[in-house]
Amino acid sequence: MTDAADAAAAARAPSSWRLYRRLLGFAKPYRGLLVFAAVAMLVEAAAAGAFTSMMKPVVDETFIARNAHVSLLLPLVIVAIFLVRGIAGYGTDIYMAKSGRGVARDLRVQVFAKYLRMPGQRFDNEAVGSMLVRLGSDSDQVAQAAIDAMKVMVQQSLQVLVMLGVMLWASWRVTLAMLLLGPLLAWMMDQVGRRYRRLGHRIQESGAQLMQHADQTLSGHQEVKVYGAQQVEQARYRGLADHNFKLALKVESTRSISSAVVQLMGAVGLAMLLFFAGHEAMAGRLTAGGFVKIMLSMLAIIPALKQLTNVQGMLQRGVASSERLFSVLDAEDEVDSGDRPLSRARGLIEFRDVSAQYHGQAAPALQHISFSARPGTVTAIVGRSGSGKSTLVKLIPRFYEPASGQVLLDGHPLRDYRLADLRRQVALVGQQVMLLDGSIAANVAYGELEGATAEQLQRAVAGANAMEFVERLPEGMQSSVGARGGRLSGGQRQRLAIARAMLKDAPILILDEATAALDTESERLVQDALARLMPDRTTLVIAHRLSTIEHADQVLVLDQGRLVEQGTHAELLARGGLYAHLHRMQFREPGEG
Ligand SMILES: Nc1ncnc2c1ncn2[C@@H]1O[C@H](COP(=O)(O)OP(=O)(O)O)[C@@H](O)[C@H]1O
Ligand SMILES: [Mg+2]
Image (cartoon, rainbow, N blue to C red):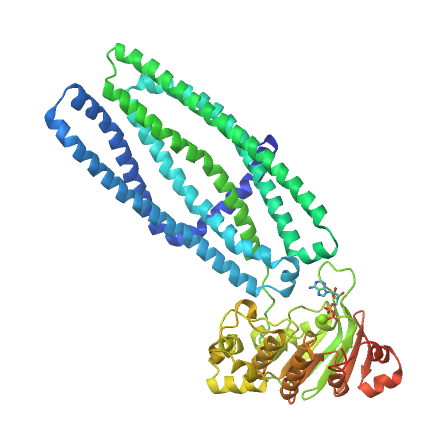
């Protein structure tokens, strides 16, 4: 690590500790398991120490004193020691894995639930991709920090302590000499390894660049071809590949040099050991068995120390991830403080001087909008793209909150109702239909509609003009729609969304360009289904289709977030304003293109 990074880490230290403590809180439910694991680790370390200690009798009794009795017993003892060690090791691994993976699971479930409770605005500020990272690698890394790091620390420290004990017991003089020299050797090895790691990091980046460029170019292959960019893209790719090639060679040579240096250092260490041990042997203070014991202990200490130096990085990554996860968990929920009971609304919607603005957007998306929509009527909302039509309807299920003014349902502000009750009153069909990988039936009877009977389901699907294609699918209602409904056409997905809305049978129906992306034939089928859905509700429809607008009870014309005209189709045409203009330019009948 560089000095700057060291300093930064030091500055963060107190808050890192706070984060880590909070993380450990997530390990609390697994306390019992962790105690078992600690006991298993102790047994493991003791077994390792016992094995190393046994090397002295093995060498001295079997080979030097040629004691037949002992030489028969020792092999059995070795097997017994490893049996105990194996069982204890399994216990450690399993108990630790259970706790660690348990913490990861608990965290990701909590974060997922939190995301579903967050206001819609959150989804504008944070890409879904980054949410997936929170649920994926962040949760795993946090578990590593909380549990795996603890495991390494305890397990390897025990290993080091036990082995040091064994060494001291064999010969404290040799051990002290090695303790003084060892760190010097370790430092030199680390210096070599450091350069190697830095290069490794750079080659990873270069690999990622290479892949990203290929991904971009190949996904856009049509543009590349149409604009004749093959040569340029190929040259760019070649440049990146060259860079990658040179780095790979550098990595290889560094790796080779560093492994030679590491081996040399190891040899130097062994030479030192031999020197001191020889000195002690001459003095009659160290037997052959004692020497083997010391050597094996040293060999066991080195990997343990290596693992201990990794703990720091593991903790840091985990703490950084936990910071991101906790910031999600600590974010505000959607405001849901209403308590006015609402089972089925009549459906009177009123906007009173409503303005709305998206976070980070300079201009308000809606300004001073007032109108009311009565039950049993259709309100068409028209306007250029970006004029605020979608924003207006999103205020009704409270996906967003107005910046000022009020939206009322049946005479009471939306905030007076519980969110779940309010949203139960609204059926929504948008341009993008959300389907999940599952059967047609599961997608139509989605969420709270789950309990619908087969008969209700049939009626909804038929009413949405969807039966026609559902029947032709191999498994009918039970056919899978594929990931995101990929096995269905746009018009088919749209009709399933309408079936869902029919099944919901809510007093408020919102259609946001439900047919805009469809071909004429699908549009006719969808339109027909919608016509069946609209009566007896309060319908708000954002449409380009002339006949929908003509038959609406009122038309709202939006322009740059303002309600500029309001009236029936005939009234607005007669005025010769924006509506008349849009009418000439934009609204169409199916087939007109
Ligand atoms: N999620 C969002 N975040 C920020 N700005 C948005 C968001 N959605 C829409 N806007 C902006 O608000 C304005 C109105 O958008 P919208 O209501 O979607 O218009 P319409 O549906 O009439 O095309 C536009 O200027 C648009 O860029
Ligand atoms: Mg829109």
